[in-house]
Amino acid sequence: MGVLIEFTFFALPFLAYVVWWRLAGRKPGHEPSKRLVGLAAVGVACGLAAAVYYGVSRSLNQGERYVPARIERGEITHGPARR
Image (cartoon, rainbow, N blue to C red; front, side, top):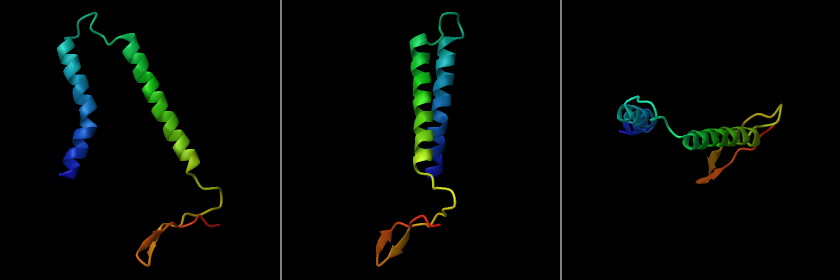
């Protein structure tokens, strides 16, 4: 069931585009507005910037190795990065 939900979320933007394309009928003047395209570009740029920031802020320094979290006495303890 989970795979079906994940596939649905993946396919939803593609399906929305196909529906829009079919309803527009590929007629001149039925393109998305410049404002909508600009907002979509800003959204993509913000998403990419957030992904880069997250990747840079969560990375380890050179020479450190990752130590995974573990359960000790019924509680989760985070593993520190070690050299």
